[in-house]
Length: 365
Image (cartoon, rainbow, N blue to C red):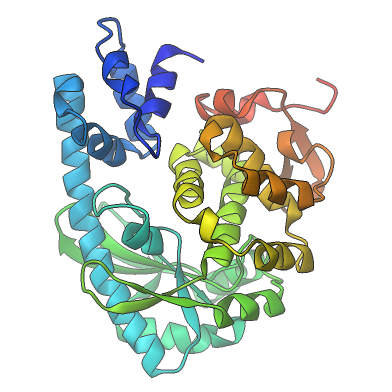
């Protein structure tokens, strides 16, 4: 691993190592490369906070300034999203729609301080049968299903046929978008999920289980209560989300890199909550709904990147799993699962490789 890559992982450790001060005194650090990695992997706001807690002067000045501005911009953005999360939550509760918020909507209220993590959108999980009711609520709040035209500052609404096509291909509806006039953001975006993977034919019993075991957390901006998955199920959802974005060929072609911030989400979640998790409840859900591949893939890679996650409890969970052969080094076409590609590169090489799809090939290559 290159020096700059190693420095980034040291900066982002959950428990900041005092040795980092000495590491950052190196006069030969390529700070342009550091800044590029931090911004491209969307961890610049978090890096600012971690270094600021030690001594911000350890950062090269352009890196300090850029990460500071990103952190402050993300703070404005997250605060505005939190306001909408509370409003949407109240409307869903009023209309008796069983729901939880997912990913950044929750993590920005639990794992991270405001400004450390940015979210593109607000993620909701509902039952498939509640799609029409949820759509009516979001429409009444000014949201349209479509894509944002940045040049003309307007939402181009999808046709009924386009909305139906997305429903039939993915485990979510077409995105809901509303324009706004807020510094650092042009739109409020809502993703309504009825599955926790990419499959439109979701296991409705699994979704029901997740929703019926929800917990209440506090929205840190508004101080309102909102619904989240319980720790066991939140861990599962984060693992599946990471697997999806790391193992589907079409996503890897579009994204260019494996997003480091998604690995950080799981890493921080493990460090903060895993000792509280009921292992029997967790494994029962994994086993019942055959989720072994997702959890195994995620844990093996997280341990490789951040060895401090390798606790006896994590090892016990790994030993309970029964993944498919080659799951760690394989990606596949979600529309044609027989179409598979493989790599022998380790996960750190994958994360820090641009245009990652090019390092995959046939099994025998």
